[in-house]
Image 1 (cartoon, rainbow, N blue to C red):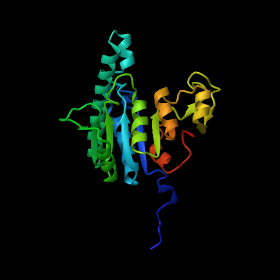
Image 2 (image 1 turned 135 degrees about the horizontal axis):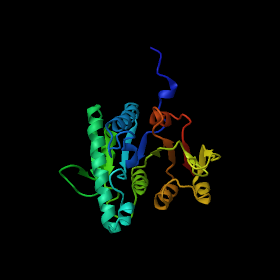
Image 3 (image 1 turned 60 degrees about the horizontal axis):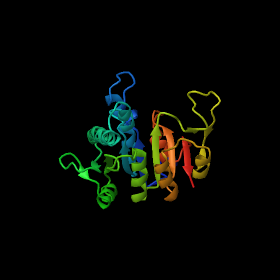
Image 4 (image 1 turned 90 degrees about the vertical axis):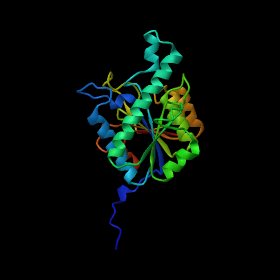
Length: 246
C-alpha cells in the first residue's frame, strides 16, 4: 500500500526539552495556580508530539505558586526562597504527570532534590532510558541548587541529554526587539543567532542558561503555547515563534 501519511506529520526533532513556566498553568478566569482546563490544554499538546514518536523531557517552573526572587522582596532569605520555589516546581510536575497519565501517556518524574516517595532522583542514564522507552520525563526541583533558574535547568538537561532543541513555551509568540505589549512598533524576529541576541540584550533566557545553550550548541525555539497545536507545529517544522541558534 502507498504511504498516505501526510508529509507535515514527520517530526523534525527526535529528542526535545520542553520548558514551561509555572505561569502557563495559571487559569485566566479562575485565577487558580493550577487551572484544570489550562493543564489539560498543555498536556494534550505534549501527548500530540509524544504520539509522533518524539522523546520528550519537560522542565517546569514554579512561578504560579512561589518565586524565589519575589520571596526576597517579602523578607524571605534568597536561598530559602529558591528552595521554596523548587518545591513549587514539584507540585506542578506532579500535576502534569497525573494529567498525562490520565491521557494515556507513560510518565516519570525526576527530582534534583531527593524525595523518594513522590519522585525518582535525577539520574541521567535512567532519564535517557525512560525517553528511549517512550516515556515523558518531567524534571522538577530545578538543578537542586539555589540561585539557578529553571531556564538554567532546561539548558543543563538539554545539554546533558543531547536534546535537539529547547522549546520554550511562553505567552508571547516569539522574540521582539522590544516589549510588544508596550510598543506597537515592536518587530518580531523569525530567527536569531546567539551572538545577535546577546548584542541586542534580548531577554531570551537568563545569562547562565543562555551561555550553556550557546556553548553546547543547543538551539532555542521561543513560541506561544496558547496557539492551537503550537508544540506539534514547531516539532514538524512549521514557521512558528523565534529560533535562536549558532
